[in-house]
Length: 267
Image (cartoon, rainbow, N blue to C red; front, top):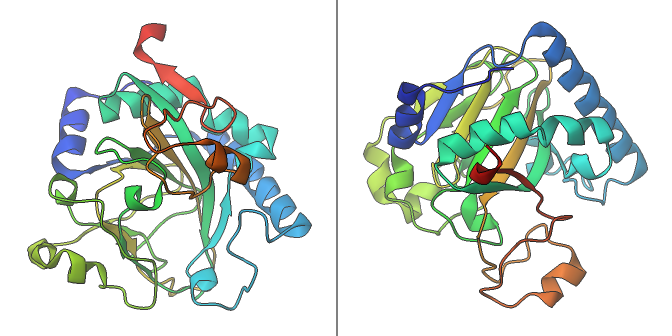
């Protein structure tokens, strides 16, 4: 695994809102990630599709955008060890430029053969906190190509984004009804060989093309919340009990729900 980011990489992330690092994992590490994620997804879908997946109605449009399995670290020790690795936490925190970083949630995103496109959207507006420094990683378990639906970004959109959003629906460009000025930004594709990683700011607009191949395109992702973030009233993936216990403005610091995986004081 890559151990350090360069100043140039960090500056590029803040300028464009995303950073691609090819060859982030070596071959053995990639195989470990693949095995752990495959096992976790198989168990999740086999036991209860209602529990933190989008596969209750697998023929729905959204279910054919990708198979989404959330919080796999809760049910698979191997995934937990990989996603919560403090080395990965430090790299993510260094990019975000925050004092500390907490996991918001992990999720596998697997675009099926002939899968639907992923509409342009923002991440943070879905979540239970508002932050301009939220960040996610997207780790390619298979080659992500133009043909099978790699991610596309609107570089710099994070600088003017608000906390307004649209859902991931049939209309790929619906986000431009909310941000018409972004129509002038040239989209940038982010094809990634397997083992590569992409970090992006939670307010950087992104989407993905359709999978025009007959093979799956697997990725493992994790969203992170800056330490010190506060509840904004949205439930998102919070448990019902935790959601009902919170008031708007409360700190989100539950270690079981949102573990702190890196803080600068740990150096």
